[in-house]
Amino acid sequence: MKKSRKQRNIVKFRLVVFASLAGLLILFSLFSDKLCPMDPYLQDLSNAKAAPSFVHPLGTDRYGRDMLSRIIVGSKTSIFSTLLLVTFISVFGSMIGLICGWFENTIDVILMRIADMFLAFPGLVFALAVAAVLGGGLQNAIIALAAISWPKYARLARSQTLTQKKATYIKAARLAGDSDWKLIVRHILPNIMGPILVTAVLDIGTMMMELAGLSFLGLGAKPPIAEWGSMMSETRNLLTTQPWVTLSPGIAIFISVVIFNLFGEAVRDWLDPKNGRS
Amino acid sequence: MKYVCRRLLQLIPILLGITFLSFAMMHVAGSDVVTQLYTNRGVEVSQEIIDAKRAELGLDKPFLTQYFTWLKGMLTGDMGISYVTGRNVLDTFMEKLPATLLLTVLSILLTVLISIPLGILAAIKQGKWMDHLLRISSFIGNAMPNFFVAILLMELLSIKLGWLPVIASDVSFQSAIMPTLTLAISMSAKYMRQVRATVLEELNKDYVIGLKARGVRSRDILWKNVMKSAMVTILTLLALSIGSLLGGTAIIESIFMWDGVGKLAVDSINMRDYPMILAYVVWMAIIYVLVNLVTDLLYRVLDPRIRLGEKAKQ
Image (cartoon, rainbow over all chains, first blue to last red; front, side, top):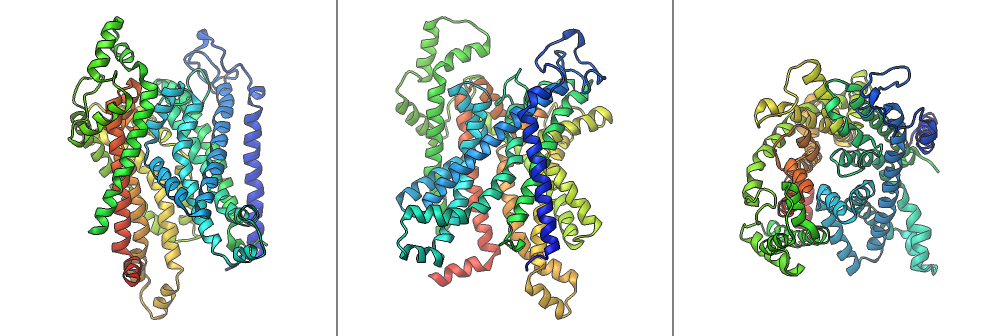
């Protein structure tokens, strides 16, 4: 059932709108240190736990640091680490999956067993172990999440490759004398990209929340670094008296996840075969 | 039956791999376990005492010996003693398990009660305002990390309205309300979507049109045919969620001071209590394999195509 031209235009319009929103958010976080009104790390104990005011629109935390500036700077930590993580796991996982699916030999069996093992691994324990080996911090939380998340992409890429491999056009290309390498790069890769891309974009929001969760538990970004998850756990005991200080980083996570999820859904609809592109 | 046995055998390599990996990582990391141990207790001790303690815990032996000693112990149900409390690891773990089980059962029940009726409602009212409302709320729920939901609930129910204590002091139904609610809200948002999508997919299949043409009532089609097929997908998802809940939701348990295995894991991690962490790792691996097994079996029971397909092959 192909969609009408009007429906296709709506899909395209949504893609453009949400892609620009996501782009704006990334740009915003890129220049966040220039955009924040005050120094996010400047302590001012005489002005601690201040209520929202003209100077501090979101109030200050227990060290008198300006919350708005901390949230703005936190965008860089949260958004960039997430993007880095998703890019890495999708590229690495898909490569493994592609190799496994294409060759279907002993390497495939071994790699897939390893993937299974990592899938069963509790992320929390991994985060600790990595933190313990390399010393705590945000990058280790990223490594831990990467270690348990790549198998999803490996499995997806593998099953996609298995389907494509059997297609007639591959046989034709092989008869025409294409090498394995050329077959993979020229034919398989472009054809399995779609689903992987959709999964990756939809994963941004989830990963952002997971990363914030690890930081919330104290296994990710460490204070005083401004990161939304750790800011929430740091200010948790202010909930009774200054709820805005605890809630505003949460709202920042929420807004970013909403934007990336909307973008992901728009990409999915756009790449949907029913959308009748090309 | 043979199938079940074969699948259970698969547990062995996974378990070996995971425990070996965790053991190796902790070995690399844990050169100062004993120092850490005394720091936890807040005492300063001499090098001799540290060395003696190392010998007592078997930490001076080569890595592989340590691993096999631990493995042999585990097979006989002896998982060592906690570095922090000095108590038996398995006993401590079993003590914390009921709290996690209670939370799992309650939150899954609540999730099913919320998401299945609402998901079906959204599917039959597709495109109407009810559908839009439900979809928007599920989208919002999906974009909120569960610790944020937890904090919002605390702010609303405990601080603003004062209905419930902020933090659980014991494991009881009253103190279970907030963690259950938090988990159910987060999961329902996800499930409502899935239920809606699955039911819609079934409703658009040809056999539904056929049944309608033959004059079968829509209500009967929905409950007797559509739901039966949709159940396969829904049950699979539920099994996966039960799996992750049984692992103890570390964040939620920690926030609400709920004394389950998730909180135990976080505490052990912060205290570098390696035997305790290993017990948690083993538990997670077992859950993972069992959940996969259960979902596969469910497919075979509920979906005749898989069962008959295999018979035909034989």
